[in-house]
Image (cartoon, protein in one colour):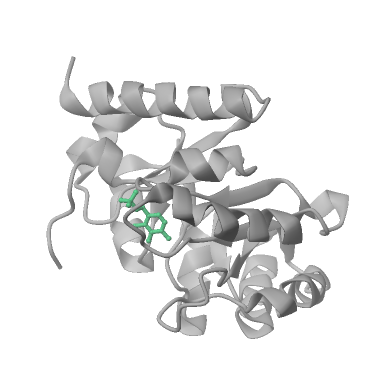
Length: 226
Ligand SMILES: *Cc1c(COP(=O)(O)O)cnc(C)c1O
């Protein structure tokens, strides 16, 4: 079996085990394959092995790849989105996971309406509390979500967050539990996705309630620098 397909099999087994531990089925967890810096041939391999969702961090990189790959998979924006990139983001992405201000939401909404669509978004929450991370501070997350929900042309579908990088994945648990607690207080129609967990910690995230994980390295191997 080619390496990417093999890696995917292992990741899926790990997702299934964590889902079982949290009383859910594998099908209830969406795997977003994170493809920043990954080439189109490798992405095609992943798609052939059953990947349905792709996560990219940069708008231009996603535009270039989508020209070759097309609209078959669902395209997720997981990197920080600048307001001046909203127009292009609307053209490429099916779900923008990294919205952390009303201003960006308004711009996305305006561009989406102009394109005759509604953009699904997640509110990014800075649960790790690290200054280098994007996202709204946890105490403001619910009020931001409700303000974004008022914006025409966007639809709040849940929350996204990242734990800090810790040597022991077990230590990420409280960060994920904190994000889940906020998610639990969203109105029901905004609770489609709780996107948390990456290569280092996706099992803990699932155990704490994630129904969407974003995994790059465990599928494609270490990223090229830059
Ligand atoms: C790069 C990235 C991931 C995937 O990271 P891995 O450790 O390679 O699994 C997930 N989420 C975000 C926001 C990222 O930028």
